[in-house]
Image (cartoon, rainbow, N blue to C red):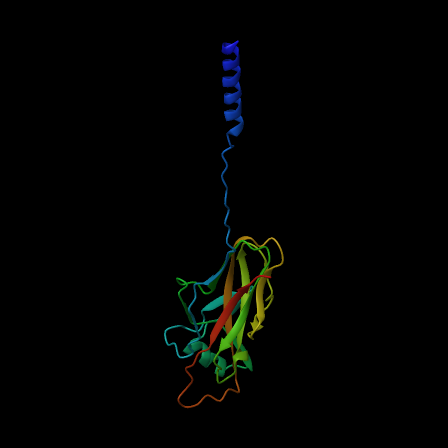
Length: 203
């Protein structure tokens, strides 16, 4: 009888120990940052109407239209021509590896985003309105708001994605400068610049 009682007691003890065991647990942590990156390779769009080496026939095609690159020969041809105004493409660009446009890249995990001209630093003697901008989609998401070269101004939307904008999107950014036959250029000439600041936002 004692033997049976001992076995029962041992069984009860082992059963109690089994009930006292806990289930191992751990956590899985996921940390995903909001990505909203904007880059532009071009650092300077140069309109050099004193550039002596170009022949005046060089062009850049923007939105399907060829525009003559700014140079001394092109400027003299304009002054001797019959046009009251003419839009010129830049003589050269810095940072683009020889391309006639700047490459704007948007990298984001946001569905909606907008790229616009945020602010413009400085004022050109002939007026900042002489500068026109044109953004052309190369790949990715969204669409351009500049169907034709558009006069620059603060808060001008260049391109955006209203939905499904996640991933990488690439746009070509062009600028033009308008010359007017009635411009009265000082004897010292003009050599000045403005700074155009772009901004990427997401609601």
